[in-house]
Image (cartoon, rainbow over all chains, first blue to last red):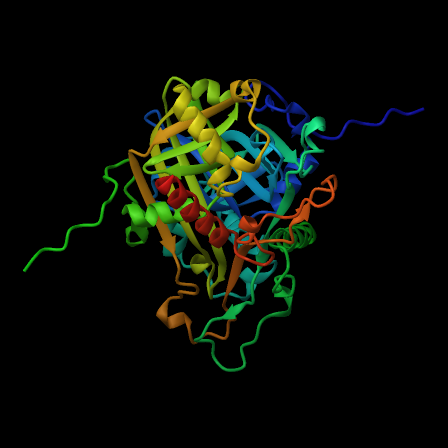
Length: 244
Length: 244
């Protein structure tokens, strides 16, 4: 009998161990990466002079490295450029939960926290690749169809990379969970689902005639879950990148 | 001629001044509060031993104070209980923007960052009120219909309060914005709207017969924008509280 190899996981220590309701915690690459790749928006925490900041930004993953960007002038990037401890979080809110007592009111969610040292990408080849994937991770192959990036634009864009040293995912997916003796009470309880969906695409009003939506944007359709479209685009983008 | 009084605003200093694309920055109470009250989920940043953490949590506002909660045992609350600098952020993602060059790819969003000292609520009366509003801010009047909170439950719930000392809102709402000379290029560009909506309510499967959805949950309807329902519930909850 052969033993089943353990799934690749992020190391666990006091930084990332899920302490509260620890049965909700996951550390395996598959769970952590799936939640990251289903998102466009994250919040990044960093510290300047003892003051924590929490900044929303678009981001993406490549292997065990997270990337995000901003103007070279931004406060966060200036302070992270030499390698600063950071925490990047993604949260998918799935429901609000109305229980039979205040204490059991809750929410279903899937969240992930990643810890590492955020560093400015200074290697020109890594930066060039990152500026392509910053677009193509969301819209595979799109960069090749665009007006080329200028030297000034590249200079004005700072790219930050953070190798994931620790990570944890936390998932609640159980809806209403009341104390056993409370179920008989004449109190209404429900799970109220919440979804983030794509609306009808709004073509730029200044498109020249005969410029139509490209076929490879088909996954971004009205009514589709944003996380499904993002996950699919991600897999397609990195399958292409592996082949290319 | 009388001068128009300035709208109440949060003070601006180097902590909260929007530096990058400063024309997107707002500091007035109305803008900051409206974005906060349209959300259930925030991310809170805090520092432990120099390591930043970014934690998702439900929260709400009362005047210029933000509240959130968790188990008394949680890492964040243990560390914030004596009054620690924190930053609470809320982000509404409104679109992904596909432009004619990589540099102008963007997103529409409305975000707010609040800075202050997070403190454990220890006053019994303030804590009791917070435990009511933790539910009633989302579902006005609901606490009065629930099984009463026990002493053990109150003990097991830590409530954190943070008076907003600095705050800034940042809004991008312009869709595709390309360089003037790029509009003529034969490249497709669009704004891809993103919305967070409510799904069909899922009543608990263990409801006794004759227990129906209460009329005051009507604002939480399938297909409605979550932020609209939350904003309406918020206004109703605090109008009731002011009258009560």
